Image 1 (cartoon, rainbow, N blue to C red):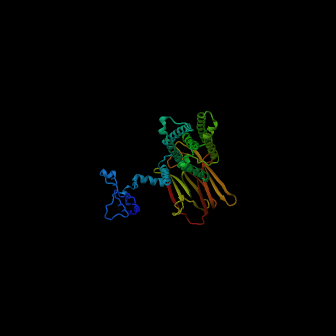
Image 2 (image 1 turned 45 degrees about the horizontal axis):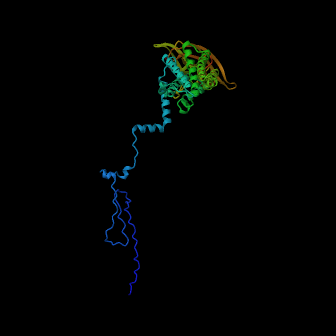
Image 3 (image 1 turned 60 degrees about the vertical axis):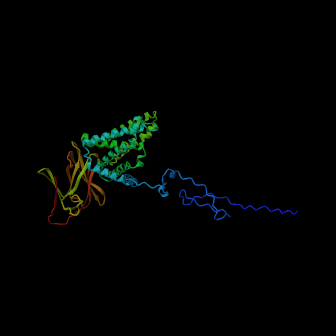
Amino acid sequence: MATASERPPEEKKEVPEQQPAAVAESGAPGSVEPAAPVEGASPTAPQESAEPTPAPAEAAAGVVPADAEDQIPTEKTPTMMEKVQSFRERYATWEMAIFFFAGFLYDVFTLGRIDDRLNLISQGAYLVVLGGLLLLEQRWSGGVEPPAWMQKAWRFSEDALHFLFGSLLSAYTLFYFKSASGVTALLFLVALFAMLVGNELPRFRAMGPVVRVGLYSFCLTSYFAYLLPVVVGFLSGWLFFLSVVLSTGVVFGFFHLVRKWNSGDAQVAVQRVGVTGFGMQGLLLLLYLLHVIPPVPLSVEFSGIYHNVEKRNGPKGREYLLHHERSDWKFWHHGDQDFRVRSGDKAWFFVRVFAPARFEDRVTFRWYYDDPQKGWTERSAFRTGITGGREQGFRTMAYTTSPSPGDWYVTVETEDGREIGRMSFSVTADDRTGPRSFQVDKDA
């Protein structure tokens, strides 16, 4: 019996696995791409659907999702106050300079007379408060904390020190400026002005208590140097020495307390107080002996060179008639600083010297000539008394007869030889023979 031949096994076709639906690149939630068709399947055959993607929680809750661009953070528009603060930070140095010079000019026009009682009391009070703050700064240094009830207020101590130093240095700068005359005194004034500017700089303030003790030592002597003459009514070298002694006594009190607070360690007291405090007193004494420090409280309010000075009694009291030939275009000259001399002429130096009320002292006029062979030589000197109290200054004068052609200057000095003021002028021979016509200024 014939048998059927065995059929070969049927070849199985491999059906690729169905890929799950892919999320569209657009990123929109819920959108999917259709599944790829099965290879070999009939195009009309229904395809197995992908498992549905669950709806987002926002959609389920009925909340419309935000647009992608809305989710990018944007910068906050700055307020006007923030713009102002940003501007101040960019120009902090200019702001500091403007406020410094504005404050200095304010003091120029508002600071009263050097002998004003309110000024003297307020500056003395400033020194007392300043000394107390400096002592507390020394006490609460090296890890020692201020008491709890003082900690909040103590945060403003540096600002208070800065303000007090600025006020005092500004006043001293103005007083010394009014009394300064000559190159050396002007150099001292430049150094003082540098200290005043330095007090405004953060780097200078960051140098700490050691520098501040030196500044305080300077302020003490400057205050006593014009307080004592105002009180006693005259100016003397011994009064300046007494000012140094009083200031040194205050610095020694600082030194003693700092040493006590540091378990008797004198080296710490020397470093924190002694070097700058006592050193400043030694420097000021040396500068005084060199005639560098201006003679506060005296100052020259006005001075000029004239061909003649007449005194007479006017309707409002004594007045002075000042005769000169100054050209109108030389408005900056005081009288005849270009002096044309004829035989027998006198060159008059008229000056108004301010002195405090109840002040009586003497001043010296000295005439100097630039001799072609000898150089600058003193030709004559004249002493006279002055009294204080007049707002515009005490009026006095001196003269020299038939000055030689050339360069001249005349000074007015205190009894201890410090220069209050000077006036330079040049002399030329007047070859004219006709009568002269003088202009007359009146100082009433």
